[in-house]
Length: 222
Image 1 (spheres, rainbow, N blue to C red):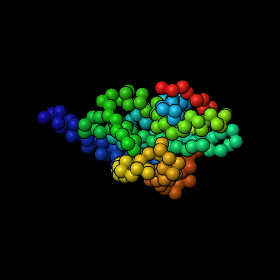
Image 2 (image 1 turned 120 degrees about the vertical axis):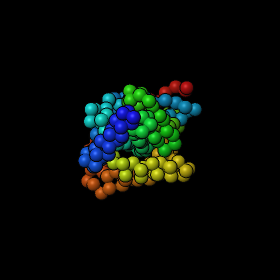
Image 3 (image 1 turned 45 degrees about the vertical axis):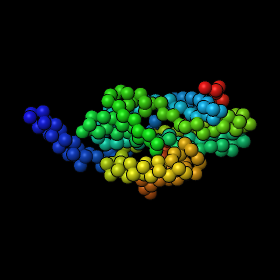
Image 4 (image 1 turned 90 degrees about the vertical axis):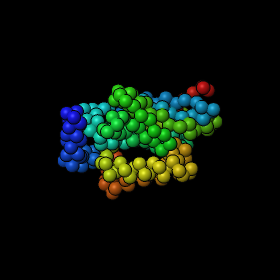
């Protein structure tokens, strides 16, 4: 009985937190440094894995563990030596914690992953991976290919989270926009949707995060 009362009191404290602190946190975004970009080759189509600098500060960790979700975004595009954009993509992951089931969760447009330990969630978030998207032939025909990328973490409100879950479901059901890792048109639609959802008409919607540059070397086959 005492355990139930204690847990109920904890839930009441959590809802008070949402009402008093949740709104200010929802407006915050945190820039993330990309340490490395690792291309991989899957059936002669190249994808990218990003190595991120640890971004789980005490504030970020506390926010997630309190039940407020966050969204990890990685925007990137690939250019050739003639400054032509070969491909453009957006990776995003919704990071959340279910305080009732005591499980951490990462959602993307086509999959969900669950974790019991916060450390496992952190490790997974630091190595986000795109789907294969760029044919090797396209890279070979355009020497000196460069990746431009930037990353950030958005702390969002509960209402925004519910909208995002609905949008993820719609993205999953629509083949042409199942993932921004699939097509440039998907990138434009998904990115504009995310901006409208989280930032509205805020002047910060384009972000102050600087683009980082990385060379793209064709990896060997798996």
